[in-house]
Image (tube, rainbow, N blue to C red; front, side, top):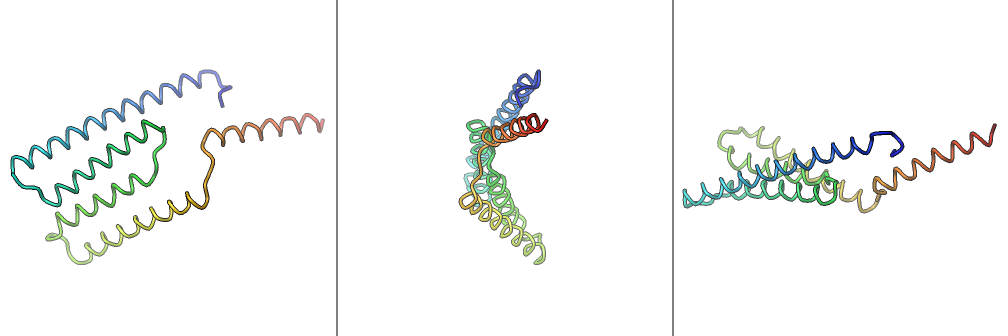
Length: 153
């Protein structure tokens, strides 16, 4: 893949854009978390909804840290955030929801949790090579096809 001219510059530009975006997300999350803590201190009260919101902020920060560290984003993290967000929604708006909406949200949470388990099981039982190994094997396959075609001539 490196044999295309300018590809390295494009990759570097994309990576820098990702890093800048992640830094903005991290700063916004810290500011939102600090605002929430200040409002809890002012109210002199901590509710379950406040704690779940803080967990959402922590999950977002963990996701940003993992992405910055490894350059990869495990799909499980957005799913965890979705479960926490749905739980928070249920807790905050339970009085305004009818029974079918509560059941639908609960079933959605169970489906997301099952998805996390299936993904985790797949990663343990069916591991896959990282992207670099995959690209190398694709390049080797292309080279071997080229060699085979030349020898057939």
